[in-house]
Amino acid sequence: MKNNIEFSYSTTNESPGYLLWTVHMFWQRKIKNELDKIGLTHTQFVLLSVLAMLSKSKKVITQTDIANHSKTDRMMVSKVLRTLEKKQYISRTGSIHDTRIRIISLTENGTEISQKSINIVEAVDTKFFSILNNDLQIFLKCMNTLSNQDD
Image 1 (cartoon, rainbow, N blue to C red):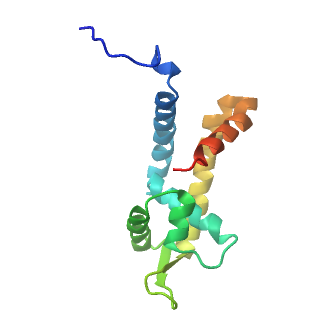
Image 2 (image 1 turned 45 degrees about the horizontal axis):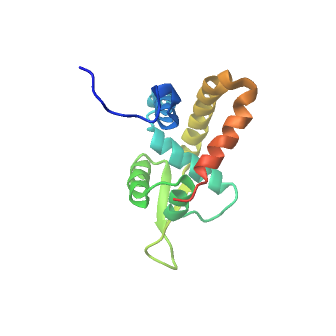
Image 3 (image 1 turned 90 degrees about the vertical axis):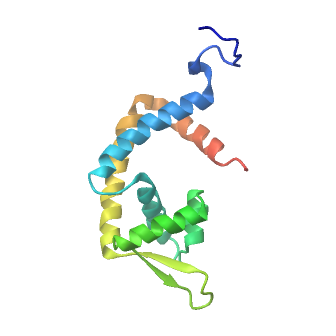
């Protein structure tokens, strides 16, 4: 049955939003398949990686720092960090200055799983994005431009 629904694009391959979604889903499936092997979700990996990256330059990292850096919802970050704490990958301690603030640190197990998962994801990324060859830097520039937009 034909319909009269109008689109701005002739095909889905002309729609940047649709293409971004399909590429994201394809890439995320590859990441998920690998992270499943070590018992991490993609979100857990991202938050552990953000914590590891922030730990290179800051001594005190809060849940808010992690949420802001990962551009994710604070309540979701709190929930995922509780799970990571149960897995003994992080410790969450209260600030002596403000009881509402939680200080987040990687445990020894957390450091190990972070390094292992970073190696896994970077290998997936290298293989997945290798098809871009010399266009990778242009792609990264475009992605950074999109990522740094104001809400």
